[in-house]
Image 1: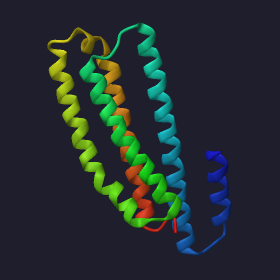
Image 2 (image 1 turned 90 degrees about the vertical axis):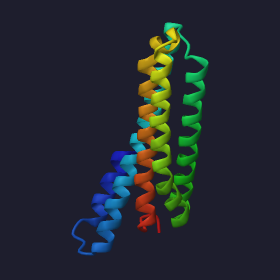
Image 3 (image 1 turned 180 degrees about the horizontal axis):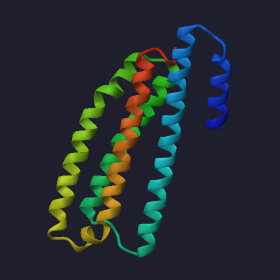
Length: 158
């Protein structure tokens, strides 16, 4: 689907000298790519979690709570950016862009908490790669959502 959308956008602008149309097509191409990337990251998180569960090693209660909190924040951001994209609501999109630094600070705080747990908790030691990969993937999803939102703010969804 992504490939077909990209090809359609390329055909749409072929031979067209309208700079506004070209800019909009580029914005839509980048939005399309970011949406695909977010989907790939979601699949990766799910695969990694299945792999972790197969080892039989659970996240520590604190680690699970941290990941759940981060995932909840990112899911809210994703819902908001999809709403902004669907409606062309620039103020909703701007809120996503404005929320990204908060999400990035949360990621850093959760990494620090994880490192503190590593000193004392064997569960955290066993699941550390999964925990850090998941935090990173969630942060990347937030960043891609913000990139989409920036395009909406600039009129790509209008």
